[in-house]
Length: 384
Ligand SMILES: [Zn+2]
Ligand SMILES: [Zn+2]
Ligand SMILES: [Zn+2]
Image (cartoon, rainbow, N blue to C red; front, side, top):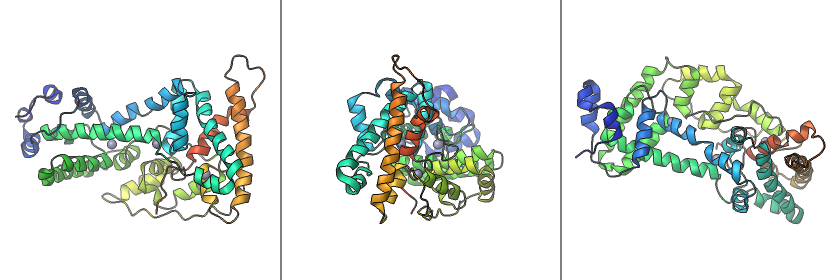
């Protein structure tokens, strides 16, 4: 027996719709083994009625909420500080997502409070333990907390979507929605886990999606095509490297290779810097993109300071680690002081004027923790 779902109620039965959708429905329909939340099913069904990837759409709607709630009410909470300290802040995407999250809750001071405290912890650690302690500190003990929330939500959404696919497979492949390729791949994995006996059928479902990708390929603009290939655009991307000269050099190199193909943040950053190059590649590579290759480490000749935490970690493996650490610590102490003045200015008793550098300190802190090029933050794995 197939249970009635909100999806069915909104769209009528597959047989009523007729045509190829009905044939797909009969082919794929199977018994449910899970019962996800009805509200979630309803939300997904609504998202399926809109263009774009429904999973990306629902993830994007909630993407900033966790960060906003931290900035709104937890910036001085000791548990939040401990958790963020263990993670050494957020990954590239979620460090920069603090900008729109901070805008929404009017709390750039909150961003400064969160990150400055972690930076001060590093400075204290280095004072006691030098390079060895710094190297140890620069290895996060836990993943980016926002990535954990997002992975949990993504898994819940995909499980619910798999449930819809088992009841009404035609919905998962019907217009105007179109699952992005990463989520189509993850849906197939989820379906094979939930109903392994139907594996061949789930692969056929992917084939139908592949036909739709090919059909839509040239009708979408390059931004839509990229979203289809790698998933949604991150909430915020820095337009250029302003704080770390190593990030600047690496970012200029990013669009020259193909390493940017390997993940969402790199792909969208490259699109920001070189939209025509990406558009051209999207047109040329109809079915498969070239293999991603590693970025060579060409940044070791720079002597300018300061640098982000990811580039500091790389530099501390070099023979002149003591010298690099001294220089970077001096830059971080200066930044921590600027941020402290900026934080103090949120107090109504504050008198005096902030310099432009002090006003910008919260952004420089983000650049220190997230890096300004995807792949260099402490949480980002380099392409290998
Ligand atoms: Zn998606
Ligand atoms: Zn993250
Ligand atoms: Zn950097």
